[in-house]
Image (tube, rainbow, N blue to C red; front, side):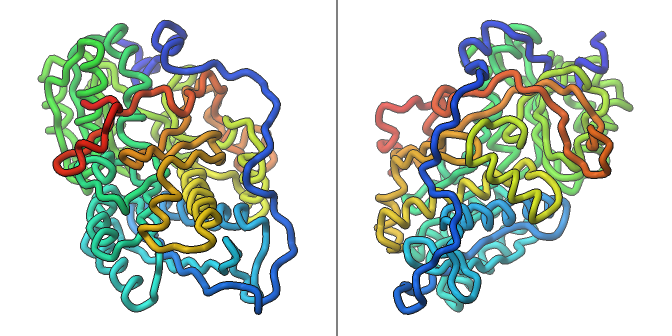
Length: 445
């Protein structure tokens, strides 16, 4: 029987896996950012180019509305940073000498609504670029919209690998990580220290299904296998049959892929049914707001994380934290950095094209783009437009969101153990059909 404190989160010990997969964090001099720090000077109105409209598809209502809020805040702050603080008379940030207007629409996590919103923004509002969404199912649907209209879709925070895999077309890019990033860094440890047989419970959408495929690939590299791949509807409130199926599978480890408030219910029912005693349960550290409710018994353990504001040691993250505290009275959260990285990537490409946002022109500027963002170095692979980036291994040392008792939540939950290099995880190229040849020398499943 495993102790409860050791099964709520993956116990990642310092060993062979991490020495191969990640680099130890050492204090280093912070490099100068490639994007200028904000200033106040701006060109005269007469010297400015045409307004650039960006259509942002997000989830601003429902169970993942918090993620949408993080996305939109990060993107706005990213534009501010990339503009050097320059605005026109209407307060729009100026990128490549063009004032940028972001038109945000709520897709409610529904693919049909996301597609309808995107098409309306293109046809009626004249947007030249799409950004978002939160939902991976919406992201997959939007790939077709981007191709039909020959405009760039910059995906973040949706994590499914499908948009830059089986659903790829040349107009689709991402700054979000993929399901493969989430599992590759921990797969070797799981096989060698937990067992070779895995069950997976995932949400029944592109995010969950993509994670199941990535898990099978990752553990398979080290001799493991997924013996039961289980999916539940996103609105599930009773996980009993899915948990029981996993417990009956004979798996040594249960890997979870979920998002939103359902995580709290899932963990509670895992505990109630005894799954946390019978199996090792592996997942990743999530957003600050729901953290204590989900991970309350995991103090002292080590796990995977996409972004936490206390981890990166660079000038861009320092700026993000400072401005976010000024603007929103709290530190940035799980997907705020992704929104900012998305804005910086687009801004950098637009500067290179002289403000030309035409899809076929912008593609050339984005392919192979290496840039500095809040997590450090990001690289958009020219072959499949996957964005390689650092991932975190953190130790949970505190569950009090207000660690210094000053009445303001600082969410200082972690000590940093390791941060992966941006290009070390070996995320495979999963292009298929007519695009499969683009993978070239990249690793394929």
